[in-house]
Amino acid sequence: MGTYVSIRGWVDCCEDGQVRLLREIAAAERAGERGYRGGWTFPAEQPMWDDVAFFAAHGRTGYEESVREMLRRVAALPAVDEDDRVRGVFRVHHEVDGAAEWQLRDGGLRCVPAPPGHDYLDA
Image (cartoon, rainbow, N blue to C red; front, top):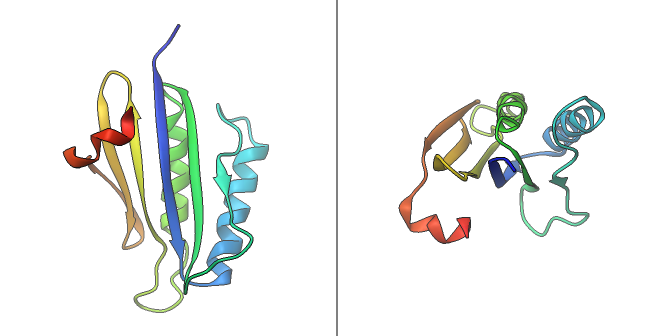
């Protein structure tokens, strides 16, 4: 059968230019030879100051590496000004290894242990 990984989260962009670049990265991934297709959702209307994009996908163990590399590129998108970088959080649940949290912040991707209070999300 195989072992699976679930990745769910969102990216918070500070301006239209960052969203445009995120859409370009997502489109390139969709067109590529990756182990998954799509996963990104861009709401047509954004009821907040910033623009948000959501990602959710399940796949066989190993595909999370390509998602991690894509999110590194997203995290490195140019800042609007000094403090307005792309930011986000992703819950990564591996059927065997358990859960981790991927944080997009300060221009990079940090992989940290998942908060135990969020275990209900892995059901």
